[in-house]
Amino acid sequence: MTSTESVSTASTAASLAQLEAAARFGRPTGAWRLRAYTIIFEADTRAGRLFDLALILAILASVLVVILDSVQSIAGRHGTLFDVLEWGFTLLFTAEYLLRLWCVRHPWRYATSFFGIVDLLSVLPTYLAFFVPEVHALIDVRMLRLLRIFRILKLSAYVSEFGFLGEALKASRRKIIVFIGFVLITVTILGTLMYVVEGPEHGFTSIPVAIYWGITTMTTVGFGDITPKTDLGRFIASIMMLMGWGILAVPTGIVTAEMTARRAGRQVTTRTCHECLTEGHDPDARFCKHCGKPLPAYHRD
Image (cartoon, rainbow, N blue to C red; front, side, top):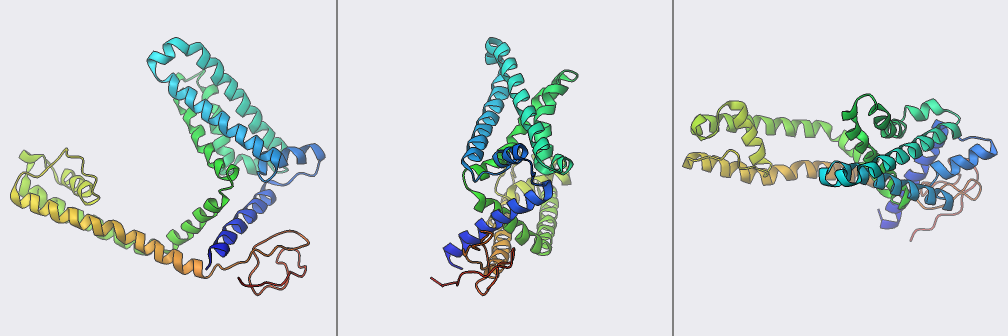
């Protein structure tokens, strides 16, 4: 598959995802609701891009306020300002959430979708803080809303690749489960062996602790809180470290092979239907798969 076809596949998947979202939430028919829907939900218009950029800046600013408010020295000097800003952001996000519910024909579907739940969680903590002040820190959940940045920066290709990666992981799940099972067996055996060799006097106070050491050693992120002291223990640790290099490469190879095999079967073109303006048709397609109108001839590069 060429790079042009790969980009076409990604952009087509993003366009189809946008169409599926419109069908799921219900694209409104009224003039005002349709205008609001276009600005809020569609990032391929100038107004939509400006709205999303402003929203991203507001989210970043609101999270920054919460982070700074957690620093005692700063909060002591600007606590009142932070409270005012937080309430301003909360009212802004509340209005945005209500607008999203208002401009779709199926508000309950949006409210129960992933982004709908995240939107709700982004405003609830401030209101709940009236009753449980400790909940205020949960406002940082707004960071999840930054996932929309993929729409703003025209990185929809990466969003579609997430789905593609998910498909590859799902297809490889049996191999990955077997591999993880092998790793667990290995660290259990070697961890138990280290418990016998090193013993509690060297920090290996139990088999679970020794298994924990085995996992951190094999994944090459050893924290140094438990280290072998005997020559035999260091020899076993060296073997586990070397095994870690190969073990980390195995799941990557499994998923990469699956992605390569799947990508080979996902060839699409950039041909656009002159009637409904949709892309992503197969090279041998003669009619649009959406509206049935004849397609322009396909010429290979």
